[in-house]
Image (cartoon, rainbow, N blue to C red; front, side, top):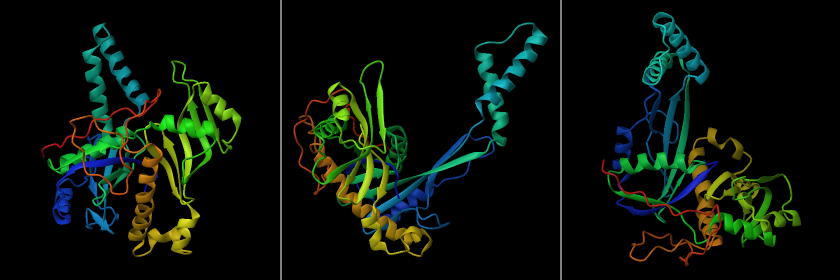
Length: 342
């Protein structure tokens, strides 16, 4: 379901019914790029079935899917074509255009070549847990997740406010402690992948891949001031993932002990009738436990400044604690997504 994910808290939500949400998604349905269009974004059926529901509810968990199609003309082709036009103008007038004219020529070339460009499409899954007020976006970067969340907030027409999950301990600070002490937090284990970076102008970087991290060398890097930007972890021997300094979960994978319960056909469940429902139920069931456990391992949710009202809490999440100092590379404050009028 997800390979990567960023976690948001639903701070305010006047939840629509599924029928109303489906209608809103239908109105913002994905349409392929036209001949001269560089990008098209819209919502599609989560199951991938034409004319199906635009939002799926599996065990009370809502699943949406945003499709993005882009067409790009290679930069080398653009430079070559613009260069030829500039050469022709210089030959006719004796002067080579600059500035605004060059920009206009570039736009003209792109417009002419876009109909011949091949489209590239990507889909992003959104999972909403209405019960505990979590929202996960299947993206590996904050920038990409922000773009998806912006469209979702606009779609809800002023009924939704979201904020990136912030924890009392910055992920980089917590990961540095786990590596230095050679001990993961309760319920977790440290796997065989890590990246450490010096928080200075040189950004000296050390990477470990398929290598045990329970060695003095790793702790020495931490003592010298390098901070972990990525660390591979496993939770309860059920889910493996890579935690980043931005509190992004990457390379998410359900482990064998989880998949065994699905039988010998687990690997081809997508092809079976009901496979989509089984996949969603399995994945959300594991991450509904993993996310609160990870927040707890990072010191709980970050306390809000005085006078700022608290949003809905997950009943399974850890209580908030006073913020602790965070070193370079810490998780910065992120302002909540304000609701946007439709």
